[in-house]
Length: 257
Image (cartoon, rainbow, N blue to C red; front, top):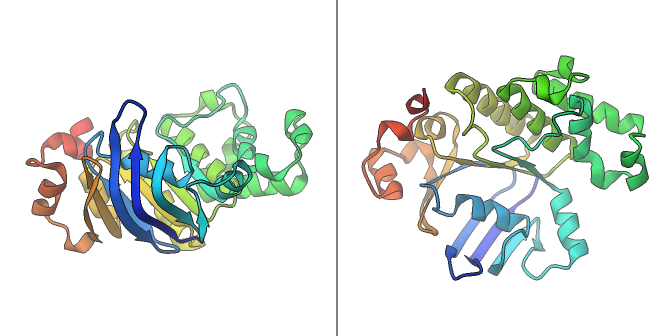
């Protein structure tokens, strides 16, 4: 588990675009946090600042370790504790599922072992356990390209789990999935958080998923933190404040059908 703190965090990209503006935020160990906002609100930038992937001023700490100004070695250590789940899955389609999951173990084994596929038995066991947690252990020796989109995303979750992370970051993990599969993936993430106590931060656009699975909701608008509270306290007026307009069917999962 890991505590994350943003203090006066600002991200300005080359060219002058300010994607985060003076954000103060604390995410406690083991929390399950959903971040919502329009495209361009700063959701992905917030996640990327935790991994040291964007030019940050101010402060970002992960488990007490400062990301801003950290050395390459320090950044690698922080990233080894942070599992990332992507919208586009980022799998090697020609490789077997088990080999994709083992990619989460890269920082734990000598490079020559991974290059030649000589993974220790311990790492293979962790990979299989990770696949079991998302319910697709029977797909371990299938090529990733032969899986459905939902199954591929669950492989992505298993890869993050194989890293044995303290934090999981999921950047729009259901954006390319159908509504039924979206609920399956969100239930996987919710259960993993509950069972393992891994601090979990998920960017979402679709509000019904945020309402159903979120515990704490963070709203971003034009790079500003405009809401931070319990999902039980969120109503349509709060969402209108975050989105700056009335909510439309496109803001709901059903709008993708």
